[in-house]
Length: 316
Image (cartoon, rainbow, N blue to C red; front, side, top):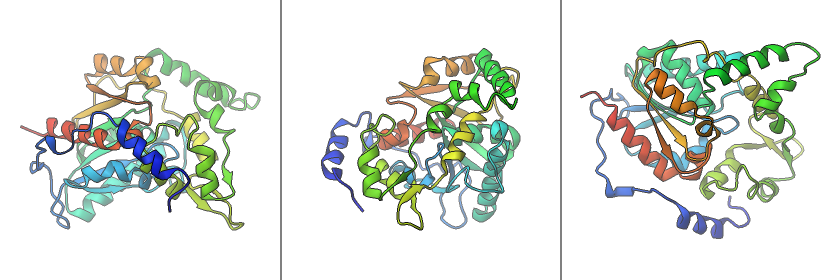
C-alpha cells in the first residue's frame, strides 16, 4: 500500500542519497565465514532500534541479502518472556537465545552480528556474554553512554527508583520524556503517514523505510484505528533503562572483532563517546552521513559500508 506523496518523495530521496557505491566495488564472497547448511550462505543476525520492527529495515537488507542469509528478532521489547529491565539484561539474553537458535537452525557455529541503536547495544552486551556464537559484529550508533556521563546516568536511574521521583531524572536525560508524550493512535495508516512523514524524527527517512514503518511499525486495533506495534510504554521503558555501568567496566573490548558506525549528526558523536571507547577499549569506529537513524535514511550506502567492514574483519 502506498500513501500520499509517495512517488514524489521517493524521487526526491533517490536524488539526495549520498555515498552509494552500488556495483562499482567488487565485494567478497565471505567464504571464510561459516555457511548455512540450508542456504549455502553465511548467516547475519540483525537486531533493530527501539520501536522499529526489523521488517522496517528491508531496504537496508537488500544488498546484504545478496551475500548473507539474514535472521532477526521481529520486535524487541514486545515479548513477555524478555521484559525491558535495567541495563537491558533480558533483551540481551533474547539476542543470545536468538543467535543460538539461528546457529542450530543453519548448522553453523557462529554468525555475523549487525545491530542498530537498541539492537546494537544489546548485541554488544551479547558479544561479551556469549562470544563463542559470534564471528564478528558491526554495530550502528549504539547508545553506549560512556565515562563520567555513564556514572551520571547510573546515579539518575538509582534516584528515580524513589517513589517521589517518578522517573523525573531519566525523562530529562534520555528521550523518554519526549517519547512518553508521543501520539500512538491514528485513524488509519494513511492518517499516520500524513501526520508523521514530515516530522523531525522521520523527515530524513528514505521513503521506502518510512513506508516500511507505516506497514510494520503499526498494527490495527479492534476499532479499526492503528497503533504502535511496539507499545509506547515499552519504548519509554527502554529509554529509562539504558545500560549505565560503562563508567566502571569492562576495560577491554569483546573477543570477536567489532567496529562501530556512528551517524555524523549523532548525539553520541557530539558527546565524544565513540572517541572515548576507541581510546580506552581499542574499538574502532567509522562515520556515516545522517543522524542516529542513518540506516533508515541511507539504506544502500550504509549496507555497503557494513559489507566493507565485515570484509575488513575477516580472518586473514
